[in-house]
Length: 458
Image 1 (cartoon, rainbow, N blue to C red):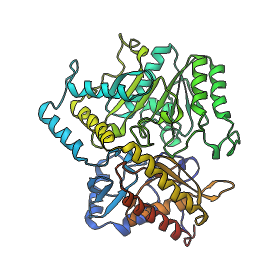
Image 2: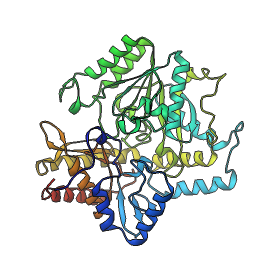
Image 3: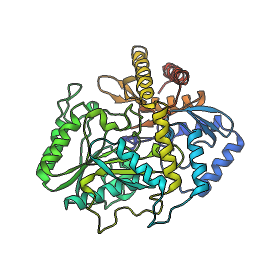
């Protein structure tokens, strides 16, 4: 019988942990001596932490929808840390970066540069509503910190409402509004005034709404807004990367509640912006415009760390006498050139339409498996943000975590890379450039793993 090293809240993480016996067994049976030596060297010098170090394998190459390990094995990458909207090593991205390196490799603070101006202009043209002001940051976590500070300065309040099980980054301010124990545990005291509410997850809803959701979770946010009376902002992921997809009217109801109580709405779309859901911005699915929108990951073209805060025009003068970001690489010209090229690829290659249609195809295929695979509790997604939740009982939705981990490692051995979320959700996020043939190959691997799992005693 397989045994899991995870228990309780440790399962509820935005990624798979790296400390199980299944992981050790996979490394022992699949990696050669040279790769194991490199992993030992990595573990010798890097601080060990859950979710990343010690590492699982060593990469040698990445291109398009494919990653290649040190031994030459190719894997379809349905993980990618959500940076690979335009695929890895896209020629237009590399060309833009190379060209910019030769022209202007860095921009000292107090100066600006053409790529930064052009990228900011392009984002304001694409963004919904009145999101006409931009700040760049070297990563999504930093952009979340800027959003929190801007909301505090704009409202004169310090309290934030966020959601349990959410992830907004790993810095102290981000984990304060975040809701995962693996980041928060033993890290206090955290930021004061961070109130947490249940997320819109109908399967694990404390209000027991079930499939017939009546938006009590949105009503609860308004209840907290009313009782607290001095909340600066509600901050949340538009769609959780598991994914949990809120009911159609959820964000409209939250938006109206924020307006009634003088709170800003901050939406975090760092992993899912720029086309992953079939829209340039995820909030467009819900016909709602936040006061502040935070994007990142794919903005750097799968190469550079780059994130952005987009804010309402009328928030422009709030920080005129104070510093909000002021990051060394805030207007890095090479990163901004990569961002401009990424947006050009998304538009010129019609990746929004492709993500929407191929995602619908993949979801339909996986939902068709449910009659054959009792492990599947639900298949859900938007575009090429997809999740397969594995359960031991569809009535109780008991998490099938050991089974999910077994399937993840079996898929790796067959050429498919993805991550687990919340311990039991196969989270599938391929490059938006993935072809129909590559998708069919990935689906065949996943189908095979689910079939083989029936013969395993868990």
